[in-house]
Image 1 (cartoon, protein in one colour):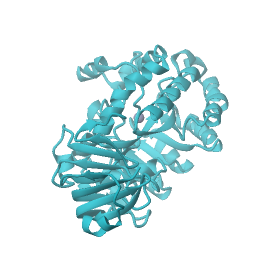
Image 2: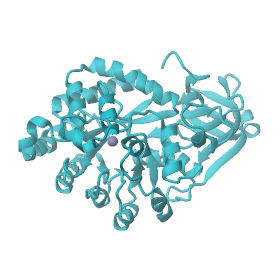
Image 3: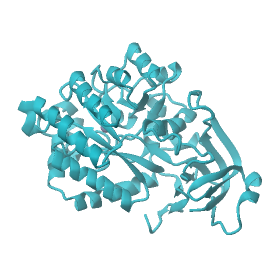
Image 4: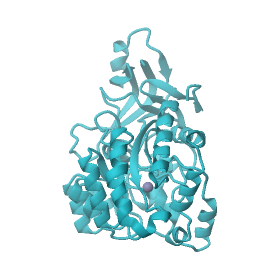
Length: 418
Ligand SMILES: [Zn+2]
């Protein structure tokens, strides 16, 4: 699609001159415009500079003096699930812990049961409104993890729903196969289950191109460091990128393992020591922080974002959208929480929700900034400047969203095709 977006009051984008530059410079252009040709950015700059480059018949989107940002990349989410778990939320608020609820058959096990009872079509229908909310919050690329199936037949169903949603909805979904926990029925033969993951499930996912990355929940009481290593080494051998849910509830060994195996990302990281931080930086692992999850669970420390940033880590933030520990589609909300509790600056938040998030999905050459040659994924916001975005929280100020040059949200409304 071709599109000329003009009359932009301010355009902000990570300035990515050098992918190893972690000083997080932000390009800020007043009276800006963007020319998208065949879905990709052909020119970006002041309107004065680029208007003459745009052929006459190209459709025009008048930004009406709004702020333009790159489409957000939500690089850690579990958006496909059945049912909801509001009762657990209130149980936790009355004093139960997340791990206690899991032990009583709630948590992942209850989502697994609900998924088992749902068809692919039902999952698709339940997820579509969520994807609309992601889009209306500014997300144009979204990671979608499996992991509520647990058993292979159910995992395959969840991956089929992700595939179907990718065809039906303008947001680009990037599927990840998540080894989330041992199914209740296999608790007594975990070794056999892990062998099945390595020898049956992962090869099936690879053969059918159902996921780009493999992720594992490396945490005490879920998968040990040793079990995670075994599964992830097999995943690497099969050509998958690897990711870990690491160091959420304690020093699980996940961060260390992410560094050792060269994972694309280590996610959560609420508990990190200096040695683990150095190892993540040295091995260029993107640290994906999930501040909305910490906020929602209420009793965990926030990850040491300042330390990570000041030492030179790649830091992304994501929603972790899921029914148990982070029931929100809003990256702007996660950014506000990160501003308050992780002490991140507006420039750091922008990088974390765009370019560094794209790195966590190995997509930084095609998305995550508004630069010539990149995908034409642009969002327009009714805000005066970038720092306002995380400041005025709880509402969406998004007015328009463009994916690959196609207008998918106009004046706050989803376009018909959406
Ligand atoms: Zn997660």
